[in-house]
Amino acid sequence: MGYEIFLKKGEEKRILAGHPWVYANEVARIEGKDKNGALATVRSFDGRYLGRGYINHASKILVRIFLRGQETDGEALLLSRIRAADDYRRSLGYSSCYRAVFAEADDLPALIVDKYGDYLCVQLLSLGVYLRKKEIVRALVEVFGPKGIYERSDVAVRKKEGLPEETGILFGEVPEWVEIEENGLRMDVDLRHGQKTGYFLDQKENRAAIRRYARGEVLDCFCNSGGFSMNAALSASRVIALDASRSALEQVERNAAKNGFTNVETVCGDAFELLRAFRDGGRTFDCVILDPPAFCKSAAEAKDACRGYLDINLLGFKLVKRGGFLVTSSCSHYVSPALFEQTVAEAARRAGRRVQCVETRSQAPDHPTLLGDEETRYLKFLVLRVD
Image 1: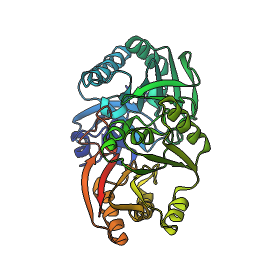
Image 2: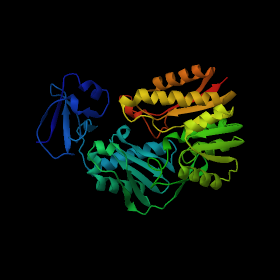
Image 3: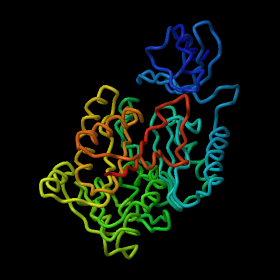
Image 4: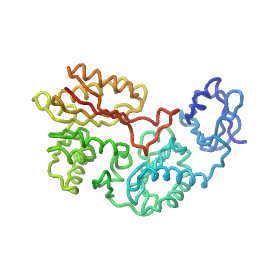
């Protein structure tokens, strides 16, 4: 008999609302026995069937539910789910670079698949999918027919699953640089060493959206490989791309040259320090873009994260010319959209600036969210006109 997980009274409400995670502290008792990583059945306190998912006794997330009915787990299900996820993206017009599988949102918990032209980059973030790596790779080859698949499971969350961080080629060959086309621009992506799976695909439509606001002189902070900088360069007279990583700025320069831009300048340094130096020197810009990394990795760090967002946005507001734009975002899913907007509003108040919200955006449609799973909605993106 396999594992039967019985929840404490009332703990099934979140699961019934669509959330796929069962936390260990929500469990009243466990019956049966099987291997760690095996399929477990989840039931309410009174025995009602809620779903099935892979179990991991080493994780606070004991079970990740992905079967709500009586589906049969196996390679055929993996193949069907991956194909359905990709069909959805293609129905929206995605073809070259996009997130093909977004974990829980596609009923494939802890599995991330990003497509970069003829290559795939994957993350296997739980014990359940890690144990099924071979089957997943076979399914990906059948659906996409890629030239190569690279694994980027070098993320801290793997340690919470009792797994080592791993990277490497899973199929075919993967070159040092993979060229993609995004928003009509050519970009080189480093799947082996770039952030996340090589590039931040969730911001691609937000990057295109800033073209109408990027005018005059633009300051792009935390620019990474230059996605926002390249889009801004199409409409701005000058773009200053700022990042603490020299290698990231080399990618910016590489991508600027690839697209024939001569109006992109790179500056290496800490964004907080450089923005303070600009402020103290009386420097202002027509548009300031703030796209920092996540300031918190847990709910306990949310308060400290908000202090960071308050500080960076306060500096940003002080650097924007009257009538200019501040474009600001947060990818910290522990900071809710309401909390982020409150923090930005407080920064505007402290800066003494009157601000109009022009656009409120989120992650691209290839990163769909589950209404019952707030973890899938993490990206907040605001375009603000500053008087």
